[in-house]
Length: 169
Image 1 (cartoon, rainbow, N blue to C red):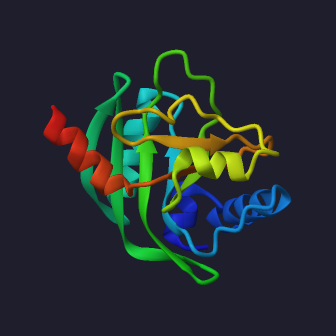
Image 2 (spheres, rainbow, N blue to C red):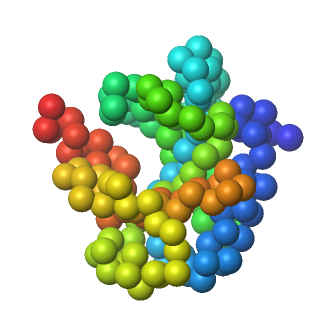
């Protein structure tokens, strides 16, 4: 087991679940960029502990406050290689008030070229989370799968979204 596995857990199993989930709802993502993998902390203490651990395997390149909680982005020293994909960023999320999530690997985000409304309409057999589809910066749609491996789709990568958020503030 390598250091990243010890810190974030079995990312390979998590990604297997992600791609199995997508296959089960007939979404083909081979042309989409897998922007990053996200890890959820459920306490502020856990967030601070994970932040220190992630700093051992990558560089914190951004911190932003969204919904009154910190979100950090780490660029990994060694990319995660999964099948034909390379993942170089981890999003670490502190808990937001009222959130009821499990700790650990939570979701991945794909950057797509499709209009989000059109993408949802194209895959109308899915129970989409569209509460952020009209967000001014970082609009997204997502699928919350029951096995804890969720997926979000956006039109911009995380770094661009954070740059836009910084400019706005």
